[in-house]
Every structure is written in C-alpha cells, then in structure tokens.
Length: 408
Image (tube, rainbow, N blue to C red; front, side, top):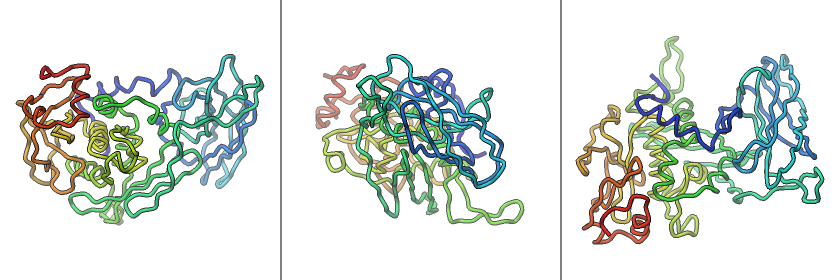
C-alpha cells in the first residue's frame, strides 16, 4: 500500500474541499500537471495570449484550454481553446495564440491559466502554465497593462536543505531532510505564484488557519506528491533484480507518517519578528512551504494539513503557556518504527508532536497546558494555567473566539 491513505474521514475532507478553490465546470486550481507537455506564456496582446508549447516525446494530439480568471483566486471571466495540436513528432515546440473574448463589466486584476486537454468533449488533463497578473487599460480599450500583485516575489534561495527559484509564474522549491531512520530524502515541488498570493490575501488566525489547513488542497497535493515522488539515494532491489531509488510510497504507513513529521520538523524555525517584522502572523500552508521557515504555530498548521491529507487522522491544537503544537488522536496513529508515549489530556489520548523540536517524535516542552482546540470546539481549558502566564496573544484570541471558554 503506498501514497495517501483513505478512511473514515475522507468524505468530510471532500466536503470541505468543495469551496472557493473550485468553480463549477472549471479545472481544479491544484490539478496535477500535464504529463509530457511544457508551456510558458510569453505574450499578451489585447484579448489574445501567446505561449510556447513543447513536448520531449511523441504523444497523442491535444489542445490547450485558456481561462481568464480574476486575480489571484477569483471567478473565471472567460475561456477559449486552441485547435488540435498534433504531437506525433518528438522534441517539438509550437507557438500557440488563443483569443479569449472580453465580457462586459470585467474590472480589476486578472490572469490567464492554461490547461491541456485531449479534446473539447473530455476533461482537462492537467495544468500547463499561467501568466502574470494583468488589467485592462482604464481608457476603455482592450489594451492590457501589468496588474499589481498581492505580494512581492520571494527572492531566490540556494541552501543545502532548501532552495527556491522562480520559473515564469511559479516557484520551484527543493527540500532535503532526514527521517528518524537517518534516511535522507529530497523532494522538488512547483507552486503557482497565483496560488501563493491568494493564500497571502486570505484572512487568518489560530482556529481559521488551522481549520483551513485540514482541508487545504495544497496540503493534499503536496502530501500526495511527496509520498509518491520524494527520493533517497538508498537503493532497493526490484522484482526484476534492478536496483532502484526508494520512494515513501514503498514504505509502510508508520514510516510514511515519520517522513512527513520529520519533513516539517526539518524546516527552519524563526519567530515572526525575525522573518516578517511582525509580532504575530499566521502563515498559511502555502506561505510556509514557499518560505521553508516558520514558528511553532506555522509548522503546526502545516503538519496538521499534511497528516490530515495523508493519514486521514484527527488532530488537535495543544496550547501551552506561550507555545503551540499538535496532538494526533492516538487511535489514528499508524504503527510506528519506534515506541512513543501517549499524552492524556482532558480524558483523551494523543500522540503529541511538536514540529518545532528535533529528536523524539513525542517530545514536547514541560510547560502547563492552557487549552485544546479541535473540530470547532475549545474542549479543554485550564484557568489556573492561563492565570499563571498565558501570553497576551492567546489570551486576546480566547476572549474573542466564537466559543469563549468560561474562564474570564
């Protein structure tokens, strides 16, 4: 059994996914990439978009579908498709221009998304590329001007554990980390800049960012892809006797669980004041993945999203005095390759995982537990612990939460 596990909570995950991330009749924003086709937008003129499309190997004919979408994550404003592109010859590049008519009332920034499909009667095969944000000339013509981005582009990074570069309108991310078995993994991931910038534009908070992480399409896609495609230099014997690189998909559930936990724990730790010049900021999963850095809450949200997607487990936010980490329902933890000590809190048992620590997976600071939050409910609070020193940020949040603990 490999890849992502499914189970009793999968239907809830699917229901939560049916939200602003998809539009009826349009491709999923995190649709997998088109296999064996490459593309890049290099020109936009009035209502026409021009791109280079290439394929290294001969393949079946296809067409490109272009959608103009409100930037960074809004409604589809219009769409059009190219004619059939015959790809029987390998290593070809075609210049393709598609005209997407402008509809009445369009305003604000928008961008082009490009997908591959076999023909108009079949579903979309995969994502190809996207343009930078654009806007119409306010003079009333169809002239196109550059649109303002939600955030500045992230600069390149070239480190041993993490690298980041920009290719067109995507971030090319590369991670390297070791699991508890001392196996070193490498994983490359491409994240669309529009997806990252839509995440930057979203509202945030302790419960809000955590709940969004549990149903995040990006966490789902990232976890699925990591477990299928991360590689190690360790070689294993295949059925045909050939030596091949191991992927997490070939491991048992406990090892895959460990690979994900150790991935998050290996990300750089830094407080918001150092990395964002902000006192308290809740990074979405997309922001943490692009930055490869975060504090305790950012890494907790990311780990919650990855485990919810890959292991289908129930998780809880565990608040200590000035600290936050994750609890995983002990019944949902697969058989791990090492022993762990469960945490009992409020009559429930968890595997406590502090994504800010390296070492034993069940290690966490010896501090008082203040509160616990899961499934929309603050189900545990300790008034004495809060009185003795919870920090101002958590105190203020608890006071204004939808469900206010009866302790103030």
